[in-house]
Image (cartoon, rainbow, N blue to C red; front, side, top):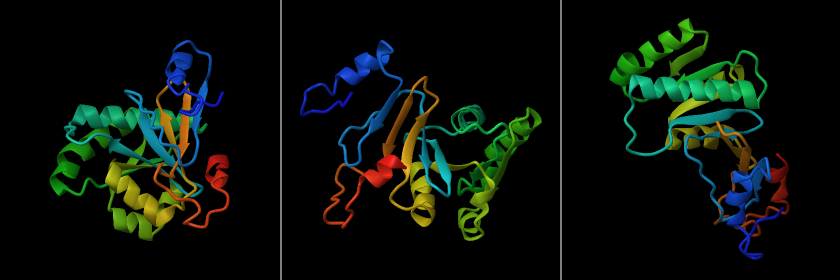
Amino acid sequence: IIYSKENQNERNVSTDLKFGNISAVVVAPGSATELKFNGSMTVYVDEHIRVASVIEDEGTDLTNDFLSEQIRKAWHSVKRDFYCSLPRVAILSSGDEKTDKEVVAPVLEELNKNGIYVSGPYNTDCYLSENSFIHFDLTLAFTKEQAQEVLSKVADDTYAKLQTSLPIIVVQTGYSSAYEFQEEDIEQPALALRH
């Protein structure tokens, strides 16, 4: 099914999802459609790296419980969505030494004791310059901005955005709705869609 404003059925996607008529949604490159589901986590998937952010919305308080829940969600997502039997997850530094020491370190210690192995926190610049990301199935950034910074240094425009922790598959390309394919001399925006 192709949902669009042109055929006036873009709202039907919610109904079809609710009644189980579809099991996956792929948002076309350059589409203005932005699907967001409560409780989901966005994973940016590139040929070289997978990145997700711990804090999706500004103003979220970073507590031990919240961080633990987000890391568990990411770890289980890698296991389920990418078929990794024992996911290797890295977490980048929050940028605040006190937070890393008082929140991140105790959470990682507790998770590692329970069989959810997460390494870090890593300094972002060192992590990227040493290509440490090639040793991990998922890199966790703290904010969307930090995730975008990592992507801009490692990925190209063909990355995809996968929303995880959902009973369905929701994926879209990294191209924004304002992207001008002709101006950028990209003849085949479908390259990102295939990726």
